[in-house]
Image 1 (cartoon, rainbow, N blue to C red):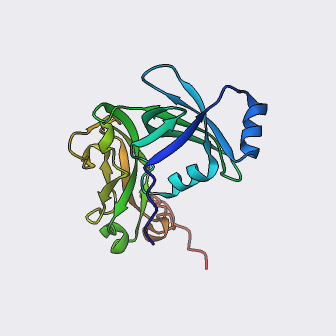
Image 2 (spheres, helix red, strand yellow):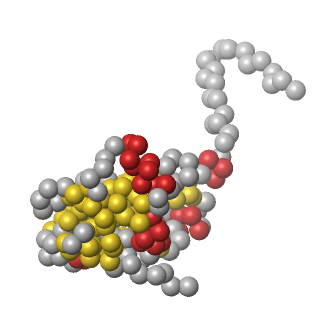
Length: 211
């Protein structure tokens, strides 16, 4: 089933702040947050159901048209604070953006293919860096960065510099950062330690091996 695309939000300005007020908003089905950038930060609330639809959609990394009171802005979802156990949103941050401005964003890394080191050489693949920071046009931020691991053998890795970026984007993450690696498993390498070698000097009697 295709994901429902969310391209606009209704954000309500709020004057009440503080922990007690935030809890009251959540009981009303609203998530407190803020819209910042290009001027003074604006405290807001967003309907919890509307936010949930956005998070489940394929559009959470895209520019959204937001109605904030009587004003309209273009915003990007920047941060969500979630409850450590229930994972329900506690607060949310949006950033005002211009569609053609260059901004930085952390984009999730996804892998494609099966590494030859895993398939044929008994290795195990580890995604070490789950997202990369890149900079480019706000309107073109990708939902993810795809990394093909098919040719990766054991003891090989892919760095941030080797990840293909969309046109117009530059890498902010250190280029030498390891993103994905394949290493041999302990079982494949063998758990037994090498036999100890004993040097016997000339004229020394060697005791018989234990039975």
